[in-house]
Image (cartoon, rainbow, N blue to C red):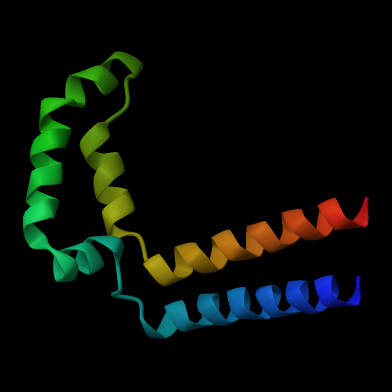
Amino acid sequence: MFVKKKILIFLFSFSNLLILASLFFSNFSLGKFWFMINANSLVGFQKYAEKNSDILSIFNIDFYNTILMLLEMNVILFFGFFLLLFTSLISVKLSN
């Protein structure tokens, strides 16, 4: 049990560190990261999205704005919040 608490404290601290680091690296978005890895696959994803965007129009989802929002999102902030949420859920699960 003591090891689990140490792991949870480490994950909680690391997630807070990621959230603070996102303030200093505010221009590190998913789209820029994807562009640095392979720009051609980003263009291929756009072609795939344009070809299959009619499926989502049935549900009144603005696909392009949703994808643009996800690509402009700060990766470090996203992983920090995700890890914080994961740590919180695990700690609630372990307390029961």
